[in-house]
Image (cartoon, rainbow, N blue to C red):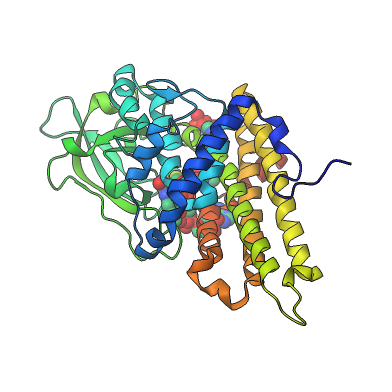
Length: 397
Ligand code: TGC
Ligand code: FAD
């Protein structure tokens, strides 16, 4: 029989191309050697080092599936493997990357004019221009279709629209150079996408305060976006896309990435727990890894990580062919987030009192995974998306 590898139990690696393996190795080396040593202090200080995006840009890891504009143009599986490597270190670092790559760059690539693409994408690919994605509002999270932010003709500036409203819980907003804001257009009442450039906004028209004292995702920067009659050139509106199809198309890629990221976070928790259980001795000098209840916890987590990875590979291959239904992405986002959160909460028990010390990392992973289960569609919302597809009846309202 073939030997069993607990780190890749179903031999997912056999499904990757040589190029995908090489990309994964580059990403893993960067993440383990240069990101991991920073994360404990960053999490304590609630600090996000924006140089990380520049470093990722130098390695070609940003907007990696985009063709042209200095982007690598790799497969969806390769991009998933990058995401997995980053989230193995911390969900906050993956969050910063997802917003840059999938939500902001992805939106511009999919819906932007040629001028918008040329203006932003090359700098964003290098991590020199930072992006944010403003959909959620204080009163409208799961139901973004009810948003209140509006775009009206600017009262004094010809050729400009005036954006007003507030967005909240926006990753990277305090440091973003370009903010992709979704707002209702005055003529049609339909949601449109607008690229708000910080450097072009007169004082007082754009504020992006940070949201501090988070108890999860502390190594990522989160803030608000306040727009007060902010002038935005009409040329900075996405020309064609109307309605929720715009933001949700961007979310399809980001949600797909989170599903991959979950397998990295869970594998990291498994590796930490396995080592701890082998080292820690209780009752007659036995390592706690000897006890069946501890072994079951590891077996459950390893199984979910392995199956979650295979599901991501399948959806990634379909995505490359343009054959991935959005509900498939809801399925893997929900499943991988729920199983990662469940399993890490159980694995945390193996650390006993030491779980409470941040040095062991497991508490950070659990706190982060609550957020990943919540953003980009809370798991129950994805249940309803799937329920609608199964029954033909929508249960949101
Ligand atoms: P619904 O009637 O379902 O759809 C409205 C229009 O949108 C189209 N559509 C999609 N298009 C592409 N991809 C998808 N996945 C799509 N889902 C829907 C749909 O075809 C329709 O088009 P049209 O042309 O007919 O108008 O809209 P609804 O209002 O009933 O939606 C309900 C629901 C619950 C599905 C939706 O609102 C939802 O998914 N809510 C969750 C909100 C969410 O995910 N927010 C994410 C904010 S961004 C974020 O969290 C970033 S975190 C980043 C990080 O730090 O990593
Ligand atoms: P609510 O919509 O108020 O939901 C609260 C609870 O009610 C949830 O459990 C939900 O499932 C449940 N619920 C709601 N409606 C129903 C229903 N019809 N049936 C059953 N249950 C229901 N947003 C952005 O736009 N850009 C970002 O970059 C971004 N980054 C984020 C970073 C962080 C750290 C966090 C925490 C959030 C971020 N978000 C971002 C926002 C995120 O997408 C929202 O928090 C999420 O969509 C949920 O919205 P809400 O918080 O308003 O919760």
